[in-house]
Image (cartoon, rainbow, N blue to C red):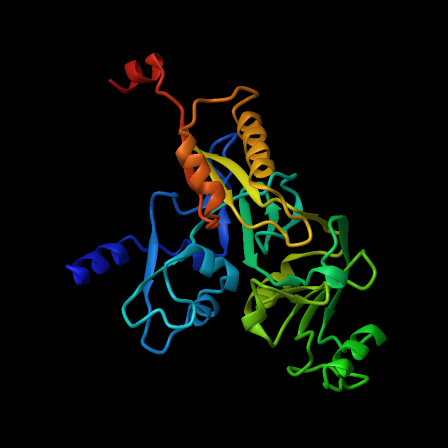
Length: 315
């Protein structure tokens, strides 16, 4: 029975998550990209796998894959255990132009043209003194084979932990910035590659945005200097896929906590906004579960009724 279930789950696999370059929504007003949300992709864990290994293999974020698999052990999924791979994403509520970075989601979206969306998992800055800043900026420069001179603050932090940094890291594969880097218009902040791929999808940097080496190698030639960058904080996203409204929920940033009541208020405002200013009838238990059990997976919360005209045309 278990083998039959696994075969069924694997049959639903599609290549949307590994494609990275996805078609933009095909209907006006839609905001969901990737595979249709009712299609689910699972991969079987191997004996030696952790969820983090599977995340790296599929170029997903560490927190992203853990959220999507709340009942799977992070460190020992078990051979043959089906692991869900996110394949659909609601676009952030921001102009679809240039680069949009959603910090709670730890994902970057790039709009090279009106018909395409490119998306990657990222790592971001730690809370407190090292958080990644919000706001609009731009790509101020591009660096291939960058060198790195650690600032005094980072040298002091490492020294306090018994780790001595070199005063200068020359270009090369062992450089902490990797082989490619974008310089943001916010002084001191970069989007760059990393040798610490297990940190993608986590808050581990000193404020910079980290990408998988293979991702930024693909991304680097796409993006021009001067491209707009919009860094947003959207832990709750709403979006239509055809006649169904979906909600995608992530934990709040630690430095910006919110109560359940505040998150509910935010969600209701977004639902009303997405439905043209009118509050639809939504099943409260579905909304409550989606808000309390943040999975980062789009959840259907409302379906438009089929109009009489549409029914007549269908007949």
